[in-house]
Length: 468
Image 1 (cartoon, helix red, strand yellow):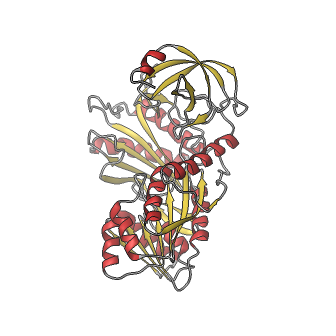
Image 2 (cartoon, helix red, strand yellow):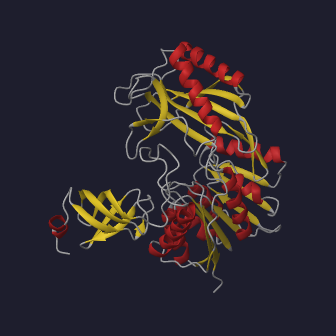
Image 3 (cartoon, helix red, strand yellow):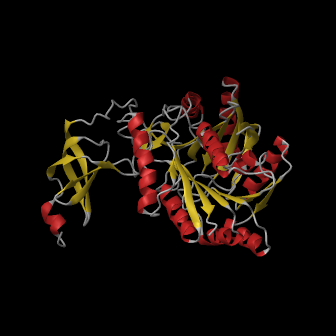
């Protein structure tokens, strides 16, 4: 296509016929018109549509549905009244079977396109056994109801900070909805001084209501995130917390986190207990864990346990082997493999997570695991320089993937196996390609759906050192 051809062929507000032939990681359907890729939200592969163009760029365009001429066989009626307004779910308009097919294909396509890798074995996706109420954590921004002006909680509309009032998100446990409604009622009726935080002006008090729930224990933590702290604020929110604990025996902890910064980061640095205990308890892969507001914890416990068990199966740790767990968080993955390994070393940059990992190991009676705070790349490089030679390395990096120092240190230590768990297939494919270029083969790949009805998908990949 010649430069400028897209602009003359496809125009904003133009209505075009479009067949949806693929899906993106963001959950948008994609079709092609006059050589241009057109992305359309809330569509499905097999849809035949009339689409109105809303934005045209050099290589692609965006559109919205004007009319569904022939619906895809994957289409279903969305089961959530907030679906078209909320920015959480992107797949509630298609069957879950279709969603899993899309996510599995996305992972393998990403490894092929970005990593130029075709793993020897691609295992079926771990579909979620529980679709609704599957999350153990939620952060609800606080705002004013657009119709009544009352304080309310909700979720943001897609690609915005426009609040969609709601208390009944299907992804969250029903107990969260009860707590949200009770907080709204108490704050509006009895504590008018606890006003919603305004991002534009920096005025107001309450930024978020942050909830955690132990998947196995059922214990709930309520954390009020405020823009400022004072005795008056603590008294008011402490009274709300007391009412919550008396009304719901599952609520074991009520915390206040103060975040005075003009930022999108939810939690601030200072947290205090208003009533109840400072932590809640749960278990992950049979390991007792203690959760504070800042503790890293997999949001879908049931799926995390299945994926960690699969990582253990692929890794196949042995009693005579040293396992190095980089980006270990609170130590769940390494601790879940400690019974099969000879020795486990965990590394994590967040000091509180390392403290949690040590406590978790002690509670479980695990004595062959040790944990070190620090940057994964720096400590791994130090281990390599000291001649520490793990037989197996487990990587569970953040969404941005592993840094170059960590990967280079892994290569220097030359373990026989590297198992990577990732919440971002694109960075996993990139990092796996780097390892492949330096002597490791991609033996097995397995996708896992931690976040049903959303565009997110996780995966685990086994890399083995070539002996030649």
